[in-house]
Structures are given as C-alpha cells and as structure tokens.
Length: 77
Length: 484
Image 1: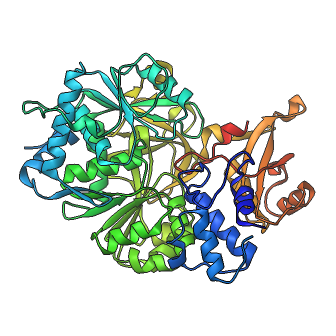
Image 2: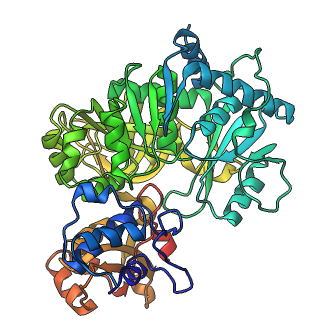
Image 3: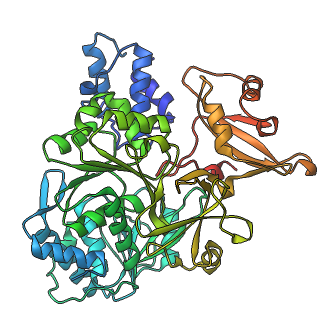
C-alpha cells in the first residue's frame, strides 16, 4: 500500500481530496493530534518499522513520512 | 488592594512587574507592560466601534496573544466576552451570534450576517490606547461560554467576574502555582479549562507559553528545556497522544515540571498510578469540573495514591453534595446526582430561563453527573444522569458496558446508547457502537458471548453497529447523543 492510500484509509479521506508530498495537518481536518498518532501507528504496522521519538518530531507532511521510510530502505511507490 | 476581577488583578501585575514576560508565543516574548498597552489599544478600538457596558463582543478563540488582548479589553470596558471555537462550522457560529446578538464580531470569517465585524488580525492594535478606565464589579457579567457538553445542544453559560476570579483563586490554592511559574497552555482558548488557565496565570503575574495542540511534542520539550516551563495544563487525550509519540521519553522532560493539571475527561487509575510513579516530584493534579461551576473537585495523584479511581475532594471554597430523590442529601456510598455550591457557580444560562431553573435546587447547581462520596469525602463518578438506560426498570450505565467491550482484544473504542425497545414492556434497549482495532473484526454473536462473562444479562446490548469512529467533544467526552 502506498503512503497516500494509507492516509486515505486511516483518516477516511475521500478520493476527491488531493494528497501530495506537501500535504500536512493544516490541509486535512482529520489530521489532528489523534489522527497523527493513528497515522504513525499505521505506518509502523504497514511497513513493519519502528519510528523513534526523534524521527516523529520531523514529521509534518506526507513527504516527510516518505523520506523517513526511504531512509529506512523502504520503497513507498 | 484586593481585586474584584481578573482584569483588575492583571493590571495590578502589569504595574508592579511591567518588564516581566506575560506571554510566550512562537518566538515572541511579550511583557506585562506590552500586554497591558495592547489590551488598552483594543479597549479603545472597541469603544470607537460603539461597544459599551454589558454589550457582547464575540471573537475568534485563536490561541494567540491577540485573543488575550481582546478578552481582557472586553472586560476592561465592562462588556461581555463571547469566545468562539475556531473549528465552529459557519452555520453553528451564526446560530450562536443570533443567540447572543453581539455588538461586535471579531473574526476572520467571510460569512454573511447582519453583525458589525472587524477582522481578527494585528490591525486591531493600530489605534491609540485608553488611559482612563475603571474596573468591573464582581457581579457584572464577564463571559458567555458555549458548551455543547455531551448532549450536542449549545448552552451559553453566563459567568460573572466574581465567578471567574473564584475559579482562578480556588485552583491556585490547590495546585500551588504562583507568580514564579511558567505554564504551557496547549488547550483551546474558547474552552473553560484553557481559558481558566490563561486568566489564572495572568492574574497571578505568572508567564504562559501558548502552544498549538499536542501533535508536535518538540514544542513541549523546547518549552520545558529552553523556555523554563514549570507547569502544564492538559487533557488526558492530549497526554495519550504525547505518550504514544514520545514513548517513555516524555518522562525525561515532564519530571522537570513542578505541576501538571489534568482535566475535562476521565483518566484510568492505572494511568494515574503510572504517572505518579514516573514523576515522583511533580505535583500531578486533576480536576472534575464543568463550565458552569469551574474546577470544583481536585485530586493529586501522589497524595491520593490509594484513591485513584476517585475524582478527589471538593476544591477550596466549594461545597459538593450528592442529591437523591426529593433532592435530599444522600449518605456516604449512596449514588445520586452531584451538586455544587460556591462563588464559582454560574448565575445561569444565557436566554434560557427554563434550563437555568431546572439546573438549580436550593442554591445547589445540579451537574447532571451521577456519583457518590465515600466516608472520607472522596467523590466517585458513576456516569451521566442523561445517559442512564432504563431496561425494564433496571438502570444501566453505558460506561460499564463500554468498559467491558473495550477490554476485548479486538475492540478499540465503543459507545452505548438507549434505543426504543421492540415491545412496550421492555422499555429501552441497549445499542452498542463498536470500533475495531486495525485488522481486527468479530461479529455481534462473539461480542455477546464475550459480554455474558463480563456483565449481567440485562446489560448486554441487543443491537450492535460497527463504525469507524466514536464522536467525541473537543474535550474528549463521548457524544452519545449524536449516535441516537
């Protein structure tokens, strides 16, 4: 599953809403603090990785998550 | 001289300690003198816009210094503050405006309405500051705070200057914070808890750090490490987010705090115990409260380590009673409605005499919460009076079934409500809304079988609906009414 699809599934985002690498919490109502936790947990489960507290502090867009996964050697396409 | 209002106390602090930092926001440090000047500038603007004593000023509840200036300026000219939730949908906001009929709306909205409006931006500070003013009296109306609570219907809670001052003083006595403290406020400003903490600290001459929500833990840790924060106010859901994101790292930072105040929704005894163990030197306080009667019961996790399932004991200067049928005070351990009396108590609801009348009995404010006191005066919550489900004459608290459901390994969250029974004889029946954990799913038969081992047969829901999420209020309470 790619990162955008994961976002749609976890945050119930409709297809009409465009998601890009720069999409962040200000762009999606459901990406509030609880949504943030759900996203982090879903990314950890889906890609079988552990995201450290330090790495979490760097996440503020979909692109940040992709970069993080790429650094961990995971393809996000 | 003793102050009659928060705004009077704030101006006394600004005179005594003009250079002290009052508000830290992003990279700005704003002194008491600067806040005082900006408050007087906004007060001048409000007067030029024709706002006078008793008029309502409705404004955007943004977590920023501008909010604090408008709030205090409104009080300074003896007008009434109506802070609005920034997430309020347009139609609901228009409804609240119609209800309060403000003389002025300060808001970024482009909504079509008949009210005089100014945009919520820094241009509000461009005019000259007033230099002559006198402070409001204690019994004058200070705020109308809207609370939907768990019922979904907005109620405008009227609070006088005496009420909000008492709320600040009582909580300071319990928590023990003072002018030397710097407190992180991550809570919304239109909400009673966040607003009380803002008022309280500015009144005391302490410093506040305004932070946007709980999503970015780094903001909290920088506030503690670099800006010297000594206290924080939080809701349990916000703490859960921080803990989930930061795992045990939060302890390294939070252990440096002098105090934490939790409130607005319950926290499990296990979670309280864990916090008490992890933060042995931090005063960890939690209040039970309502917008109508402020924070009126307090607990401190270390002191009350053997009473962690209780919400605590009445806060200083507050009386709490448990009322039964016929409004008689009940004996210890008997469950009834929690009622509160004290200077913190609202005089009633805005433009709603019926609800005001219904909410008071012999000077007691009826909270609508059910609970009991033990022999030592500790108060325990049992549920909401409105939520009680009557199954064939037997009373069922939704929270009990929800707790059982949520102990199932596949269940993430749940909410139970009453629905009309199929037959007149059964009266109400129970319907459960269930959210599964990711990748988990079981059917209603299996849930029913599981519940048989957990609760009495009449408490087992007859209907199940599987949903993606349970609706919550902004303060973390289940909105069961919305599911009906």
